[in-house]
Length: 426
Image (cartoon, rainbow, N blue to C red; front, top):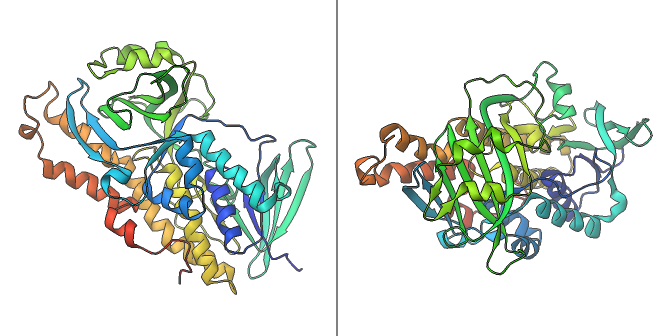
């Protein structure tokens, strides 16, 4: 059987669309298949770290993304009483050549989607096609099977490769690892929303307050507001429980109830932040358990590989979920450019580079990643402190942040000077 020389991509989230744009720019023919019949701007806010922004800049998308979001100038940590633990500059303010951008997830996805339609063609995007399986012929290609959700019938598509970007409940991952079971829950629940408020601090700061069991996060994601000077602020109110058994499958679109979490945050009223008022100002709140999946021993199987959350779903700590999927796409492109004559070797090389790197992040995020500084202070000074130096040294705080930057691939000097991830990679 002869397979067409094109790459099939399952999933049109940020990871899948970045993969399509990156491979197309490198000269590969691509087709994208998405399960939902209509792509909508779902979700609330997210952060694009400088290493991901660099890759999107190389795809010519920095200007629309910067216009859609807000540049983050500082990440600051506070105790549950609003005492400042420490802060670090971010993006251009830290010396990166690229900004850190906070924006609506929908703004990111639609920026990518519009670029796909313009550059690759709307006819290469197939909606309402849910990946259900595939038949792989190593060395030759793959026939992917999709459920047409409009007709209920099965359809097939042939290609040289299949890149499964189909999320935390990936059909391809389940085929490779049928006994894996559902995602792991660590007992934490996040209530997320967006509220129009006066700026917090300088209007360019991401704040985190509290500790592992009670945490409040907020950051601006848009300056488009109904009144002058206001911003759209994304917030996350997080509580951790002792149980880790989920009673139902997680769902990003599940509405939350204020009574379930707001009382625990009534004390988060500081001179510079009124968290209860922000929560009450949100038109809607969504609830989601903090889940991830165990690292895998292998992503690539012949002409099929996993990418993004399908490969490495991780706790949303350190602002790395979306960013790591974008890095996957670019490394994959570089590997396939180097191995054009043997694309399966390219997939194998991609696996060898990205899987160990994301495994470390998954495991680090389970230990709170860069947010560990908040729990460190809570453990040592649960009733507050007069001088932070009596509780934790600046060297300890710097070490926590530096270790995570290195681990996640956005150490400043390394990022500013390394070659493009999409350059041919041996």
